[in-house]
Image 1 (cartoon, rainbow, N blue to C red):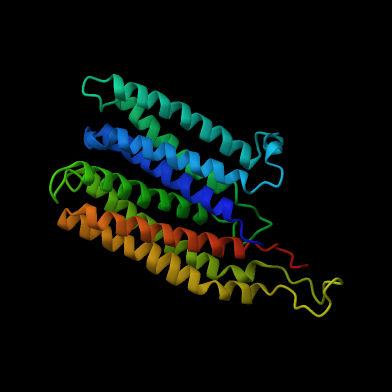
Image 2 (image 1 turned 135 degrees about the horizontal axis):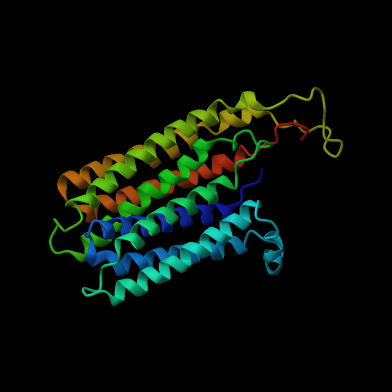
Length: 295
């Protein structure tokens, strides 16, 4: 399958946006990270908006986008519903945030609802890609992987914002739930990355060989070779997505929590996680081969 860069950008930014909003809501539930609440909300909204704009570049006729929302079982319909619901809750979150006594608190029920909806949005978005016709895509590990992206990008970004809002190198971010969330999210991302990478590596055996065949329009061109295609993704998967996108953020989160200097280590975690997320999505689309290898 051809690379779909608009969708790569969309899935990455939406996971980042939901992860950041979910993190700030989680911190609000614990009553911490108040300095970063409004900046985090703005950053999350910008990421979601840019991701939404990126989708339009995927369409040849963007004005027909609503033709795709014709059935509730459609993956993109479910994505739209999840985004709209989260956007409504996010607006209510901001209103209650600004109207609170300290200008940085929300009711706990709203905070936990926001966390849950953030998880649902990422899961629904990832689930829209799972299909039996694409063996390399047909796994719950893909959903867990995208959730892992949200779990590392969100807390790391929140820690960076909170660290920048504080004074001195040891800002509020390392204390309590914020630093712990960044470390735990990085560990979850690493575990999901390794698991999904292993699944992709073994996916070559899931394709059905139809026998001898060729493309009559290109009779001298070699047909798709599932095993070779899977093997060719190893550098992207193991070096890009795992070594850079999983191990580096985990190490950075550990150092950030240990040293308290999130102004240094949070950007390292974010940049590495983004690089890994892009590498994995490139491999993901390269492996979007049909179960029946006719062409």
